[in-house]
Length: 135
Image (cartoon, rainbow, N blue to C red; front, side, top):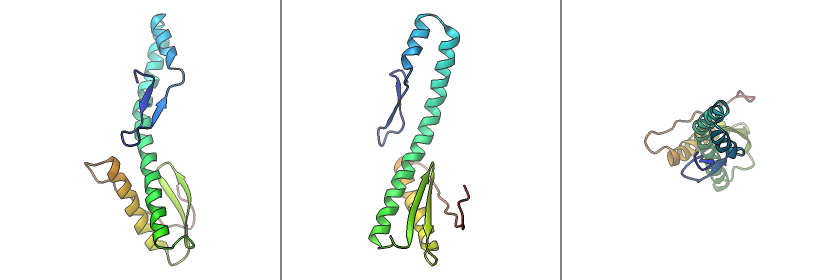
């Protein structure tokens, strides 16, 4: 944070830049402690939150790449469609008869992607099969 950005995750090296980071230096120089500590606290909370959410987003994107590759390799693009990526979810539309194989492979792809970021504990994924989005 001391450089005006946080590295969201060490794998992709993605960074988030604080747009008003110079204000922190100005408040400190002016000894405007109320604003300084308020802004500093905001940045510190963001540092914790962005790393968690950013890593989860990166894992989801990689899982979608793995799943798309699996779809292509198995010629299933006519039966299984990735419709949406939302935070840490991958939503699919699946034709009847393909739901179990789609769910099983989506879980595998998500766990495989999770293993790239979390090498100490395996991350679990659970596919839920419904007729509508149950976020």
